[in-house]
Amino acid sequence: MLFALGSALCYGISDVAGGLLSRRVHFGLVAVLGQLGGLLVTLVAAPLVDSDPTIADFAWGALSGLGTGIGMLFLFRGISAGALSVVVPVVAVGGLALPVLVGVVVLGERPSLLAWLGIVVAVPALWFVSLGDDEGTAAGVVSALISSVGIAVQYLALAQAGPDAGVWPVLAGRVTAVLAILPAVRWRKIEAKDALGAGAVGALAAIALVLYLLATRQQLVVIAVVLSSLYPVIPVLVGITALRERLTRRQSVGLLAAAASVVFLGIA
Image 1 (tube, rainbow, N blue to C red):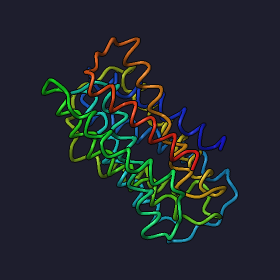
Image 2: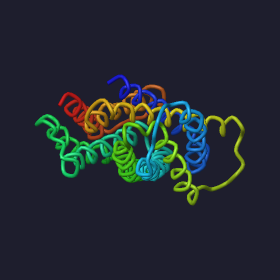
Image 3: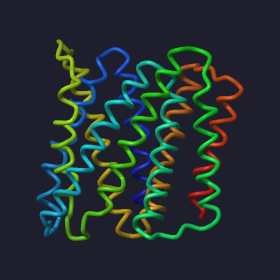
């Protein structure tokens, strides 16, 4: 549980910092520099962890990285166009519900009735949150939904790596994430502090992913995904308080439903 909750904390801080940075620097550039930062961190960490990875572990890690690349690219794109307090919860709920469904249908896991209730609640939650009154919110939600699919792939693929793989699957994922993002990058001049900030964001996200990987080795994939998906609490609080983002009544109901969905899945 501590690994998964630590992952959520790192993800929450990373999303806030990366999202705000993507409002003044092109989101593709923030995403690729972030993944390069994560690559550096995992390059240092991987040899330090006792491991015996197989080709399959590297393959699962590479597939996970493809999901990461798509997820981060559209996450930052969504935040640059819409409200932080709306985009991140949509990504979280979508990225949570899909792995739970795949865990049941493909992996044969059996969540409780509360978990199923969480999935059912997640569907109208996504709908209500997407009912914004401006085009920016709508564009942000569309990007968030695409991002959630990438995040789901990231979670599911990484969880399939073997227990002896160490950090190497995360390293492989950072390589494919960079390759996935590169075609969408608009290369332009960037200040050194912004480049370092983007790298730090990616490094923190990589640490979050390592903590998630450790969590999957201690409990069901479903539970690890759920606890790691508590990260929207941080962006929502920052968006509503510090950034003064205003939500419609329907969006507020959607966010409450999304929170309930995570709680149901978490205690299941």
